[in-house]
Length: 176
Image (tube, rainbow, N blue to C red):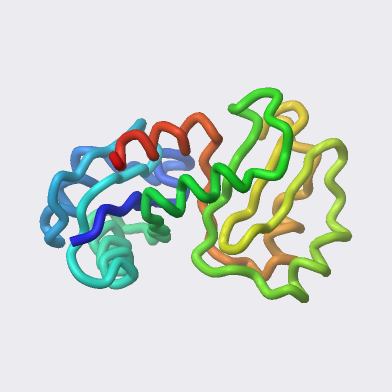
């Protein structure tokens, strides 16, 4: 068993309902122990059996079978979350305006270079490993960054973003 933070992309928005009690139950059905969730946006902390990637794919399948939609599950260890938070390259003026977008895989150097042309306005982004760090000048709801264009340039890698407040809370929930 390994302690993992499993992030489910785009749930409880746009009609994709996923009650957190059901997420915990599905994780337990897949062999996870001590499952806990944080806010209703697809954040699960649990001890998962075997290969974490296999667990993530099984959880995706379970969600699709039960709820009828597909959403990616992207997981990290507590130490990986700590490292991502420590690597955040932007001054944090407002934690809720700064995000880490966890990617399933790292983009290629060529993709990162081509994404440099994406208009950002006063927003900023930087890829570090498998994380896309973002800072929105006026909040994600008023982004100047052309996010769809950035996603295309980076290779349409499945991602799910959490603001720095949420990342800190998930680190706490994952324990030491």
